[in-house]
Each structure stands twice: as C-alpha cells, then as structure tokens.
Image (tube, rainbow, N blue to C red; front, side):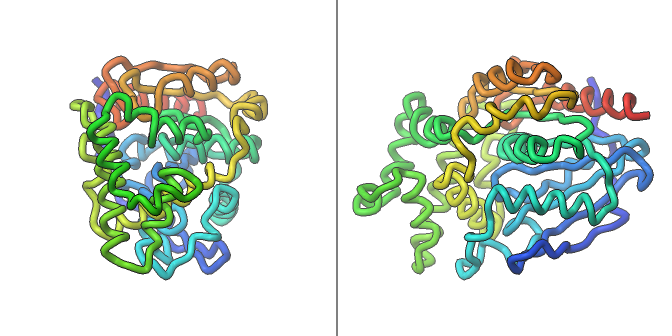
Length: 323
C-alpha cells in the first residue's frame, strides 16, 4: 500500500490581487525546479486543505496550492455577510488560476482535485488546454443541473428522513418562491438575521453529512467539521454557485471534452458515491479517450485508502513521465 509523503512546509506564499477587490492565497512547496502541479480544492468554498501537498513527491514536484475566492486564507472572506459574491463565479475562478500560473512563471502544470475541483479543473482545461500537462481527478463532477438536482433532491429517495429535515429547515414562504430548495438556501444564508444564516448553514452541512454518513473508510462528518467562519463561507459559496448552475451551460463540459484531446488523465471515482454517482465519470471517460477511468469499489465521495493509493499511483506515474 502506497503511503502519502511526509508533510512539507511551503517555501513561498502570498496573496495575489485578482481584481474585484479579491486577493487569493497561494503557496508553493517541494522542488522549485520540479514539475508544476496545482491542487484545486472542492466545495466550492472549502478552501485548499494543506494535506494535498502529501500526495506529491516533494523532490519531483513543484506543488502549488491556492484558496479560491472568498474562502480559506483568501480575502475578503465570505463568512462576512457584507462580502458580496457577485464577482465570485466560475469564469473568474478560471481567470484567477491563469493569473496565478502567470504570476508563478509556470508554462504548463498538472491539475489535481476532485468534487467541485473536478468541475473547475475541466472548465479551466477546456479554456486553456495548452497550459495543462496532465489531469488527476478523484471524484468526477461536471456540476450539471441534473447533478445538482440529484444531490439536493433526488438522493433524498435513499435518505428520506434526513432530506425531510433539510427541506423543512426552509420556511414555507421561502420554499414557495422561485428557484427551488437550493435557491431558498442561497437566500437564507444571505439573510440580514445572523441566526437565520447560522441555522441554514448548519442544516445544509447536516444534509451533506447525511449523504456521506455511510463512508466508513472515508471522512463521515466532513462537512460540519469546520470552524463557524469556514462553514459559513462554504455554504454561502456552495449555494451561490449551485443556485446559478455554476454559470455553465447544461452539458457544456461534456460537449467541449474534445478540447481535452491529448491531455493524459486518470479519473478515479468511488462506486459508493451517493452524492455524485458514477454515471458522470463514465460519460466523461467515453467523451475523452485520453482519460483512464478507475472505479474504486470500496470508496464513496470522501475517499478510502484504496482511492488514495490510486491517486498516489497516478500522480507518481505522471511525475516519472515528466522526467
């Protein structure tokens, strides 16, 4: 069984001005002359978990982590209700990644991430395929309307009690407005009433945790295990993106998968992933001949030791090929 690499500290870090009053936190660790690799975190709004560094051999890779707008150590932080999210969109995150690449003087980089990070990786790579050397994804999503509907409605068929609690946390007057449940939560976490915001954020994360509660080999309870500020930023940003279908046309990423031709990739997906079923990874692998799909039978959305091994193997392979 492969083991993650020992933790390493960054040799450089900073806040990069990206416009609209936003500064994104970035850091680099490992080998300054090594193969560049960017960790793209999920959420949206989770912040870059620093443990991502341990998936890379620090002697081989120049490891880049960053926090997307509004979360982690990026500023301003979306936990502050006065911080607007109008300039926090998929297009702007793509532009931020490209600005960071230019700032660091990187020609091409390997992209690694999962969940929402998968969607952002695909959107970036389809916009800038010449800047991407390889891709490793653990937990494939494309944030299509039917995927959002499944996660916040459809999977409730399997978890009726938890879903009713999630639904009933929305006042009837809000639930009857246009846009459905996700849009209602988007309004609630932007309420002027702090108690309303906090209640909605906790209910959202309780539902997310219910969807992964069976993942004994992964990280059950992952979503609520955050500080109050991190939890609020996460839910505000999630609801904002999902209420707007991530500003992507339906099927856009699948339709434009031909732009990924020539980019080697490994798509790693857990068969037990209730929130993001395997179908999305399957469809993407069919549209992208350069991508190898690995289905991990014992893993859900938050991973397992077997999934971790598959990620380590894929990254190590691309590291060797880059030598």
